Image (cartoon, rainbow, N blue to C red; front, top):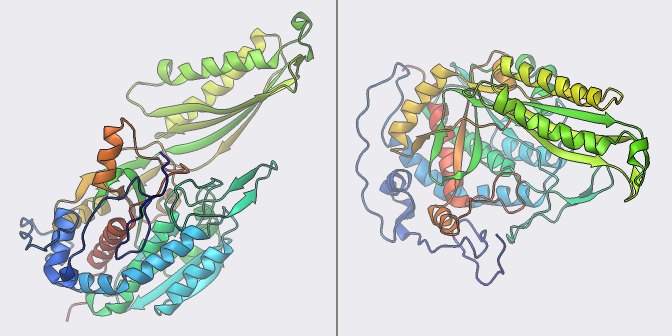
Length: 485
């Protein structure tokens, strides 16, 4: 939804919301008070006067012996109050300077500079524009925390005061804007905040932190490129890997956790339907590829509904169809582009086989040449390590005090999965980025919030940023406990 800008809210985090989403929310003078963080994490947005939060319910201790309670959170509250402006400045710069996949040079430089400032040893150019930062802090496990660098070819319509004005020309000659429409700017800021906190509080943990800025996530190529360039050999090999992803359907202040399957296999299929062209007034002398394509589109839609077991998630979507040049000309070809999603390897293969069979079947029915079918096996499905997810879910249930929900299974793709396939236990969590007031507003309108990849997507920054950093920091502290004295 697009609105005229009449009034813009300012907060501790700067001007960042268009008027359609602005809701009054005071910030207490006592923001630095220790109890405020407990209120903020446990109860949602700050009230006008901070009130003492009830302590979280006691929980059974895990074998990881997490440091429950408020001591590190007290430090985090004070640190975050001091650090917030710098983190927001970084976020705004990243949002204003988006770069497409495989073109993330300036983004990597900015991120590397921020990490170097905190004392990390930084390496650039890993797997393309990938950047790696290492912070060694005594004996203990190695935890890798990943952010993604790239933006999308989307022309921004958020009306934010720092909205992207970057433009580009796509490979087909089409002009386009460039936008962080998938939240990668917030991912990078949360990971930088995590590295900054851990660098300044070394007495709270022991081990090795590895932070990475990964290129080309949107193309499903960056993780593989970094792994092939020796990410796990040239740098301390991770015992665990953490990441987060923004979720516009989840309210700010909450995170979503899911053991096991999280995101889908993603495959791309290109089909060129072939016929025999001619005059539009004499279709009987032709083999019309457009009509073939129309029949094929309808046939493809019944693969999931009539061939795949109903309990197995699957998607076949025809996202593009192009054929012909003029009103009265029947062309020789028609081109279809498909995205295919699944979770299990068996269903993945079933979908590919069915697409090929149906495309060739339609051609045979029309006595047409066989279609050209190109399969691009893309991102593998993401499975969170069950033991790691269960362990950290217990930590977050205690330390984030009721702000943790079960994440839903999704059909989106994420190449963070590649690190898991390389043998590293991985966990990606979902980060709520839409305020409760905005969610209520969209519900009243009978609409959903702007989705990822939308030109109108943006996070409610302050609460999202604080929650994201707090979740990653507490996860790292649990996985890299202080060495025994």
